[in-house]
Structure formats: C-alpha cells, structure tokens
Image (cartoon, rainbow, N blue to C red; front, side, top):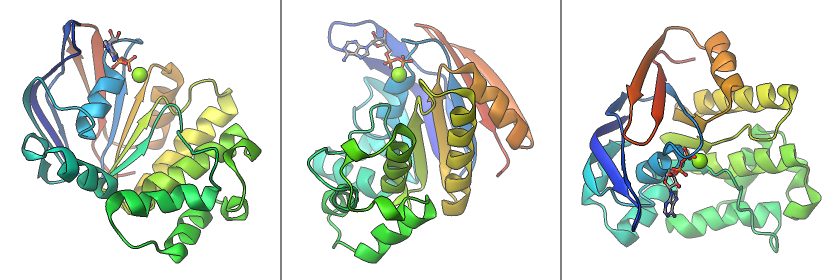
Length: 230
Ligand code: ADP
Ligand code: MG
C-alpha cells in the first residue's frame, strides 16, 4: 500500500517539486514515467524514507513515514522496502553472498545464510555467490541486486530506471523479472523510468490497467497504475 497526499520536496536552494497524490493498493504495479529531471528518483527517495518531505503526508507499507525518524527509518526501510537503485551499489570489496549479508546487518536481524541462498536461487544466480561484483555481467549484477532487494520479503519494491542502457531483449527480460519477482513476494512494484519501452511491455503483461496523468510543477508525471495483480 502506498498513499501520498500533497507531497512536496525542495532540494536546498532548488525549486519545489510537487507530486500528484497516489493511492496504490498492495500488490499493484505502478509505472512512474516522465522525462529526466521531473522528479521520479526523488519520489522513490521519499517513498523509501531516504528523504523527508518538505510538506505533505505519505504512508508506505502500513507505516506513516511522517512519524519515522532516522534510526527507525533505517530499520523500517531495510525490512519493508526492496530498493533496486539505478546504480546498483554492490560493494566491490565483498562477494555476492557478503553483499546480501549486509542487508541483515542493516535491518538488525541475525544473518541467515539459507535465506541468502534461496534469494539468489530464485533469481537464478546461486552459482555466483562467491564472485565479486567486478566478475559479473551487467545482467547478472542486476539479478544479484534484485535478490538483495527481495531478501527480507519487502512489501514494496522500488526500481529506478531498471532498463537504462539495456537492449530491447534485455529490457524485456528485466521487466519480466521484476514482475515475476514482485508477484512471488506479493509486493507492490514501482518502476520509475523515462524508457518508453517499459509502458508497452507492462501493458502487454498486466491486465486491467488504469491510467492517470498528472501535471506536476516541474514536469509531467505520468502515473500508470496497473490495478490488478499480474
Ligand atoms: P528524475 O529521476 O525524474 O530524472 P530527479 O528526482 O533526479 O528526477 O530530479 C528532480 C529535480 O530535482 C531535477 O530538476 C534535479 O535537477 C533536481 N535535483 C535532483 N537531485 C538534486 C540535488 N541533490 N540537489 C539539488 N537538486 C537536485
Ligand atoms: Mg531518476
């Protein structure tokens, strides 16, 4: 579940970004499209409680984020949000297995190796557990990052430009992988992208879509809520 009301965010010294209200039921797929600079990544950062809104209210995974502060936000994020950032931020000094283990550390939970193995297996990359990120292809690294994102069974998966610089086949594979993974976990999926191919791919794969289009102060935010589960 995602619910936002009159959300704004102002970077220090920057103009104020105003976001359209959103109501996203649990398990739905939301496509957030729009040109570069319109505020997509900022919206994801707000949903993940990485930044606090300048004004407005938001609830994500049954939590009011307005009420969350610092340490509580970190622990909540580690458990509730699976973030697939645009830059994957895998630690180059650590193996794939160790990169996933950091997630337990961040959430304050005891490390569970069998869950790491299961997450890697569900994305078909269990054989890469002892490799370092530099020894992975782009597609493998993205699968590892997605395995890390879903390790703790998050209620919400946020993917930021997951198809940037991918060719058409890899783009289709990445979208299919996100949909399948979200469905497996019953998670709400938000894909933020300026890649027009993603809307076409999602429309072909998901029934019962509802489109809404909202003009923001900075740019055009095109929110496509795919209401029904996959
Ligand atoms: P998108 O992800 O849609 O490309 P962003 O959310 O990254 O957009 O950025 C929205 C707007 O906020 C842009 O105009 C951008 O220049 C500005 N912005 C982003 N990050 C910062 C920052 N750290 N400091 C100041 N302005 C920023
Ligand atoms: Mg962005």
